[in-house]
Each structure stands twice: as C-alpha cells, then as structure tokens.
Image (cartoon, rainbow, N blue to C red; front, side, top):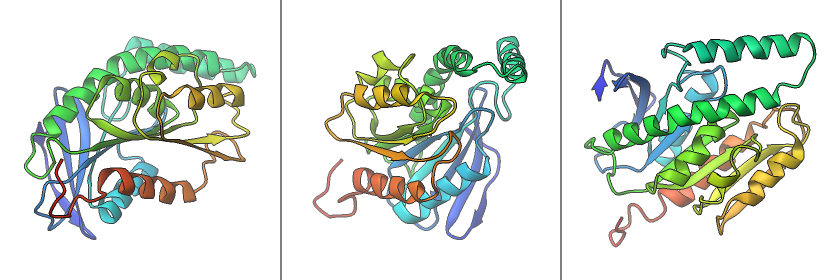
Length: 254
C-alpha cells in the first residue's frame, strides 16, 4: 500500500493511496494513538471514492465514532480504467433509458460482474489496511454500501469474516440471495418505498434474506436516490454501537 500525500482538516487526516492498482482514500482521526476499528465505504453506480456524499459520510464516522474510514474506486470507476464490458454496460443503460425501457435487469447482470472483480479487491485492501499502525488488525470492521455498494458489499460480508457489521440497502435479491443467506452480522437496511430502479418486493426479499439475528429495515418514501439525510446519523449510531462499544474500556479485549 503506497500513500501519495496527506492533508489534515477539522481533526481528520486524509491520505490517498494505491494498492495493487486499486485507488483509494483513508481517513483517520488526528491525535488518536490507539489502534482504531475500520469502516469500509462502497460508493454508488457512476460514483467514486471522492464523491461528495461519501466524503461527508467518511468524515462523520471518523469524527463521531473515532474510527478509520476507507473507500476505494470500484472497477471502472473514478481513477480506474474502464474495460470494454464497462463501456458496453454504460452504453446499454443509455440506450434503454432513451426508449423508456426498464434498466434494472441490465444493472443486475452488470452487478454480478462488478462484484466478482471488486470483492477480492476489498479483501486485499482490508488486509493491507489492517497492517497499518493505527488500524486494529483484530478489531471490528464495518461495511457501508447501498445500491451497487450493496452488490459488492453483501458478497464481501459473506466472504470476509473480519466484517462484523454492515449497512446495505437500495438493492434487490435477484443476484444476492445466496450471499445474503451467508451474512450473519448485524445489518441495517435502508429501503426506498418508491424506488424506480429496485422493485419494492425485491428489496424487501433481500432484507428478509439476511441470516443476521439483528437486522433493521428502514423504509422511507421516495425514489432510489432519495435516501433521507437522517439515515446518515442512524448509520453513525449503528457503527458506534457495533464497532466502538467498550473499545476504550480497560477490560475490553478484541
């Protein structure tokens, strides 16, 4: 893992990095000497690691939960070069929308390919991050990702035992049923009741499909991109509860 620079502001250190051709950003609290838990953040479709909303989320988790937060560009996004398959997908989406045809089947198929490439990248990045001095190598890890972030995050949580809590949502069950059944960690699941991209029944089926003993469904009115701002605070409380609870108590051991 190679860090290219560091900037600091309002109590947060921000360091861009590259790892095995993967571009990412790590944010950490300034002045905290103890090793901290880690939150992994997956961006949405057509977005990247430095999207405004993802930056705000990372800074929230760092300052309010005192965790380290990492985001990477998914294959074909941000600083990553698009493959021919990625380009064909983008062209197909544009064509379907131009004739007012549903795009969710196309998104579902592409999500399978995207996850197949991205899950091993997240696992490799996680291993490298946990080797850092200020990240707890054996501590809890959270994953936040909705929409395509869930398409990558759900199989990541199923495959990676280090992930101990997750926020997923705005995704359907069609390609994630098998992976969801292997997820046993606490899950918070925001769902948009009037989602134009993910049919409501499909989102409800995915939420129901997690094997977690603790899972909470947050259903809000609105379209796919209309997740209410207060869900950020809810996810922050969720991660505070599952990642940092008792972390600073003398008797706590991870």
